[in-house]
Length: 223
Image: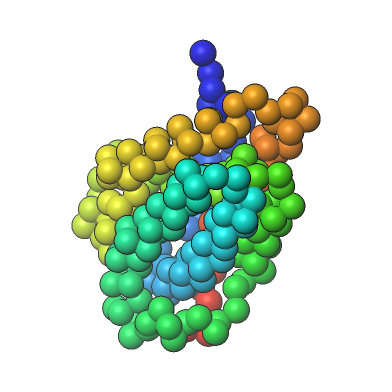
């Protein structure tokens, strides 16, 4: 029997496939991505993660019990402990620090994405809207980088392998599976209208993921 998240993922898989076929990810896979494009991506991702964390702040504000608050806190901890390590190594490669890049602006596609997620969490009724806004990022990354690791083994000899390895690792899937279970739990019993709204939030966030990858094929001109 399909779960709520199964339905959302099935609807967005064609979008995730489009992400995989963007110039940025194709060239990352075959090792031809210019390093300045990758540097721009790492900077944009760093700025994105700062705003991404704010989605969970709105989730906490809408929470009705400590279990939900602890759930958001654990996800924030995962973002800091897991996603920060490799990103900071890359920044150091270019003589950058997380603190130094914080004043930089988000590019328009990045800004539109984080604004959408924050508004979905802020204006929603609770955990379902919050989780539908943030999960496409987590889940599509696992799907995309597992595909790259399987289909493009040459990436292991490239600058990009540490990033690919992080998201293709089985431990990352375990974390994602935990959050899928949580999302299915909070989405159980939604009214048809709210369920449809949540599915649309998931799909729109997936579309924003696509635009982020398309954006990343062009380097930033301020780092």
